[in-house]
Image 1 (cartoon, one colour):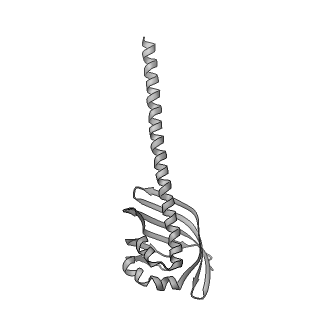
Image 2: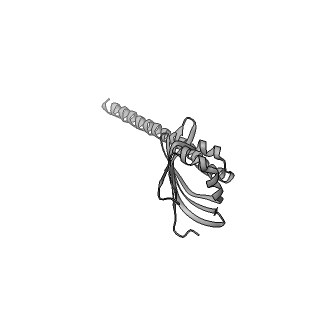
Image 3: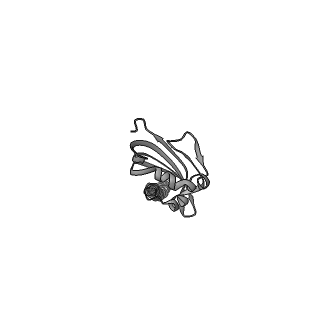
Length: 165
């Protein structure tokens, strides 16, 4: 009887352990699937911003950026703040001055923390600044926050790699 009881307890323990692993794995896989969908949405939103810049779509950027968004750009040593007050009013001028000819995103990675997603990637761009064409590569970080049903950029940082021409 003692052997049977220990065997039953052992089998119950194995069953409980297997069930726990299944629950944890199921949770992890559903969480990974949700994060994968978020990653796709955030990457698509980032790529859409380059296309919107080409079209000079000011309405896209009004919805794309959070009201309190900040940005470190490669052309300025200063933190840009309050985009609805400081950026959007002069959007057409800036988009006309700096035209995106080509934009490529490489090695995107999205890290999800609840309603916050951090997108990091390498980029290669060809832009026209006035009469000069410039090719460059850079490192980009964009922090997104989900507001309602929309992922919006709350911070961006772009660092140009050496050797732009």
